[in-house]
Length: 386
Image (tube, rainbow, N blue to C red):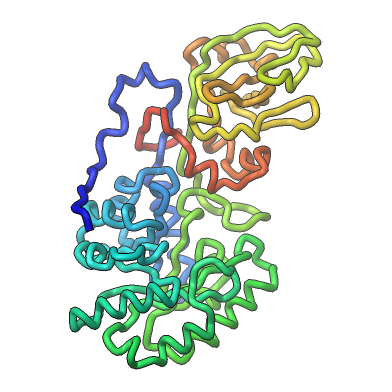
């Protein structure tokens, strides 16, 4: 393969703070508190790993990983090999799995950086086993078996056949057998128990190899799903593991955006692109310096046919007016005290008072999409959300 280079993390804020239209604050203490809470749910001795793919769900891979490692987390899951190799620079002694598996011809690079691919197809398993055979030793990797989600993973028949084949497995001993829940966000869904039983049936003959099934939802569903290792993701970052009920996790991110202008809109006039919303009364609106280019999704805008999301200004809710554009959002501040609504003041678009899951509901999506999209142009600050 062609030589490659590792791009080290650089300062997240190359400009003075006053030049940024918004500020993204990330509380790594809250992330570690969420990890500790999840770990406390493990009554059967399972290890609590951390899934920090997609730049740690938007919170910063290096900063989050270092904080979790300091807290005691030793095993990390990312998605693609580039994330894994970058993470290795920050955590030379951690166990790192790449969930997207083995890309063709990359085995030597993964071995060089001590990255464990999650082998999700028979072709990947054969390539990894051949690499082990050629080297005369077994290199660390997981094997993923599909129990019903029908994405990555060997079929049950492939899995049992492969692990029983001495010609294939003679040089390779998996470090982990794993699968993934399709309906964990709905804990009463019958598919959860079905997948659990399939996973147990397929892997029970190999109890000497550690096993993993639980994501965030699986951790909260109880010991039956824990096996030897759990790998929570969204719950670490304050997201909602279950679609319904209380969320026990602490929020970890706060987005504050500057007001650029405050203006009056007469009743009957329209606001924003496509004249999507008509002022039903005389309004005072505030235009803030962020939009869908900053991860504040366009679908959370409002129209005459449906309400949109909202921001918070002090203790006051400020509904979104009209379409969210690339760089701007218009808020209804008619009923908010004027001294709180000034040019240059910050409004909370997401955070302790505007939960990602609630905002996502207006956008007809999930909090995962919000968190992983945030802050491309914001000042990035690490510290408490208060």
